[in-house]
Length: 98
Ligand code: FES
Image 1 (spheres, protein in one colour):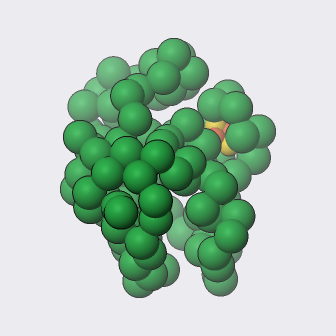
Image 2 (cartoon, rainbow, N blue to C red):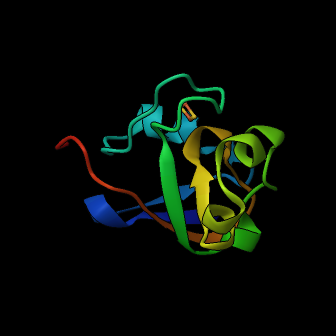
């Protein structure tokens, strides 16, 4: 099992290893938004505060969309993420209320 902490919403959730973040967000009530769902709009941009090693590798879409500097600072595209294992903490700029 993995645990993900959605910092802006103060929600922690346990998930099966290998869960796609976008699927989890569909099932639970978090304020992280998604748009295109395929790595090209940036709506799902977030920062990984802890547990980057527990997430899937940076995809080609993320490399194309995010600046190298953003990636170095822990930014990722939520629609591209798979929670592989362990603990992960993410934050984002909250646009809408829950
Ligand atoms: S939803 Fe568009 S980049 Fe993730």
